[in-house]
Amino acid sequence: DADVTQTPRNRITKTGKRIMLECSQTKGHDRMYWYRQDPGLGLRLIYYSFDVKDINKGEISDGYSVSRQAQAKFSLSLESAIPNQTALYFCATSRSGEKLFFGSGTQLSVL
Amino acid sequence: GENVEQHPSTLSVQEGDSAVIKCTYSDSASNYFPWYKQELGKRPQLIIDIRSNVGEKKDQRIAVTLNKTAKHFSLHITETQPEDSAVYFCAASKELEFYFGTGTSLTVIP
Image (cartoon, rainbow over all chains, first blue to last red; front, top):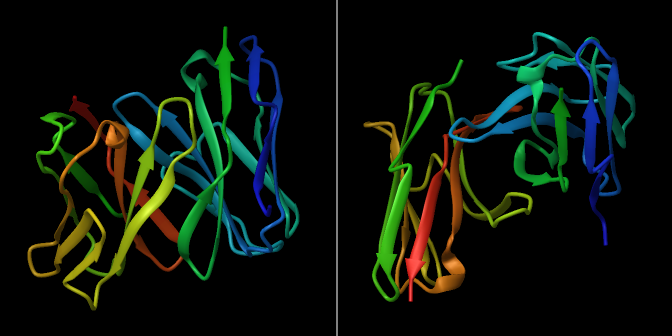
């Protein structure tokens, strides 16, 4: 089945470390997104991309960067992780701006 | 940017009763309003959506209503079942960007 795959599923890291979360999709969608989920705060948009040459900041992009290496791949980096970046991170895709499909999520803990 | 508010944050209903979750949005340019269900430990999944040119949409026990003038939309679940227990998120979207509410934790009591 066409899907949205995130790696790793879980990650524990230390303050100050650089880490990368990866997302790949076989749905053939052009649009890809990164969200973080915190209890009581819902899903907040970090970055999104319309295609390989298009990167846009979302509402909480500070401390994060992204790379769209190919239409099917969209990675999220934390250059210097801090504890308040501990959260559940979701990658999502869509075609034509409707019907977001989410990946299975990456639980990140920054100690 | 868009601001989506969602109420209530928690909701408990008896099995068979109805549940209603309400959301408001701030940007009148938003034109697509999906609802997602997230079961414990799983990814959010789309359950129903509505476009701004439609006032109501129904799919079996689930319905969504939209009031563009007041900028609010609601999810209605009838004849609730224990498997409806989950966190529900509303969202508002225009073009590329999706903005989500803070979620409603629904518990259906058998």
